[in-house]
Length: 464
Image 1 (tube, rainbow, N blue to C red):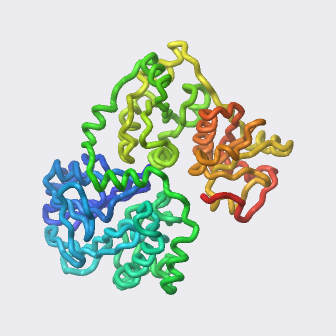
Image 2 (image 1 turned 135 degrees about the vertical axis):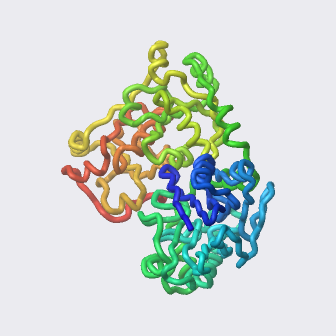
Image 3 (image 1 turned 180 degrees about the vertical axis):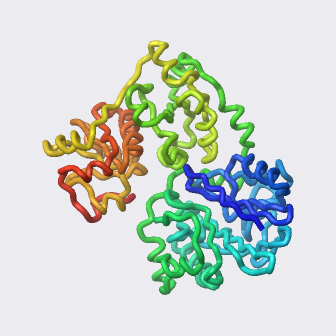
């Protein structure tokens, strides 16, 4: 028996490769499938099944492409209604992979079709649980992603039954392999580890503690922030099917000259600049949104960008394919192309550029002492532990819908925890006509060591 977790950091997502006696299965694959096919080939195995724990909302799954390339059967749990051919497993149904097996455990709650897959080893012992978004390390899947088709309270009630009647009854030593780790928006506050055990989660996970059904529903639904808008689009794509990744890449990998880029911008096309914030700030195409490839790129692209809006990519030379691929992972396929030669070609063509000023935490502290306007774009849970007195706290995920509450008549100093999110925020505000935005290098990690007046406790705001 061989099990490998294949973790994609920019999605905070875990897929799994399982193998026994030359037969393999993949659980919750991401969109690019070569990694799974190459791993199976290297190990001399044939992929027999592709198991899906549910209709993913935060990324486009690779199950269809993987099935088309390998002949593997796509397995969903009960009630998963798709526009393409799959096999819907019954609760308790068992699938053989070499000398091991996978048992279906239908666990509605995160979504109605959510299903965990329990691996039984060669001696038929319960060994590990691929828990999808039903059970995370320290958390459970959020119950509010059906876009009004069911209430979050109804789904939370289903989750209570799934956890108490099925998950908590598993042996303590069973390993838990979830679909996500820290940074994912599929739960409220995922732990830093990417695996655990049933026993450890029963001791430490708030959702597995003894409580009434009503108490559980209140606990699980309390404090939920609005999910990124792209979640509903991705869930629909995963349910209805999609164009092959190869076709998308071929269509979107189009080199654009500066003049072609300028023409598309004039027609209303968005510019997404994926260079590091420290490079972006020095010179960028006016109106560009900066989301650096060096951070949780896919998650933030999905959070702040309109999935329906055509875009042009600007990146470091050699990063074009990576950028467009990582956008496709989350369903962003309306890419008109990339600026050939990157920013140097734009500058050499004599075209207009813009810039953003950044200051150190020490310089920032001096400005705060003189009454500077401050915008903190961290999550409210981060700001609760410490924030600048009188700062305007608007989490980055909420910035687009709260622009009207941002100070515009004087210099605005923007910070996050480390500088990544603050540059995204600064670029968004710049694109909306805020010409006097200033980024703070290294954010709160350095600010907290200065003399700025700090408050703790939950700040006033609309939510994370």
